Length: 247
Image (cartoon, rainbow, N blue to C red; front, side, top):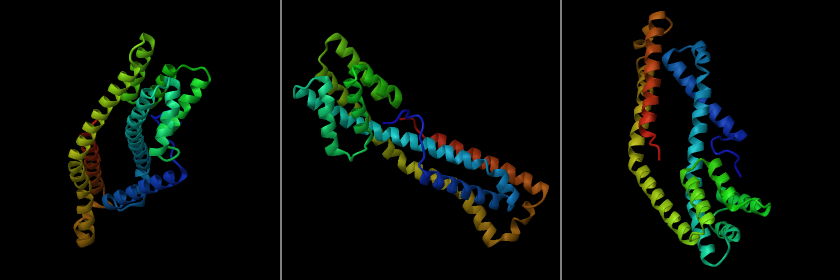
């Protein structure tokens, strides 16, 4: 069970991996733009920028995976309610069904297990679901918790409501998946655009090292390269903003 889906705790292996990747990026930029160890040291704070960017990327990937798992959880819950189980016991049956679909440790299994544990401590299902929605920050889960709570209070047809909610969530996820598929080619093109300037500098440094010498180790060259680096990093950020469609 995750306390807060807005944050991501790296494992030791992940920390080492992303810090190393960030360091390699800084070494490449410092080497190509300045050919100076001092420049690499001065650019070292960018390692933390890269590190935090990876954290945000992993947060979004985890949310997307949880959203997919939650759709299956709703379908399992709907089947259990249709079989005549109460709302509280339906979650227990849903967990059994989910264990046949997902390996032990899957987020939805842990969340539903935590929800069941809360209900056994006399916490209402509605409150437990609301807690899940707040922690996840996922719109579908938050909306489902609100609809479920309203249905319980007003005596609505919970089975029909859950089936309808599951259908709506499934349709939304399919639309999101289609969008991701459509923009995947554009993301690949954007990735190529981001590495092209570095590739050009690498090519010139290897094939014609003397061609770039006037831009290194002098005030004018450092100024020009700094401006180019700022433009490159800014363009990199803009490209990320363009292709990062909020789903």
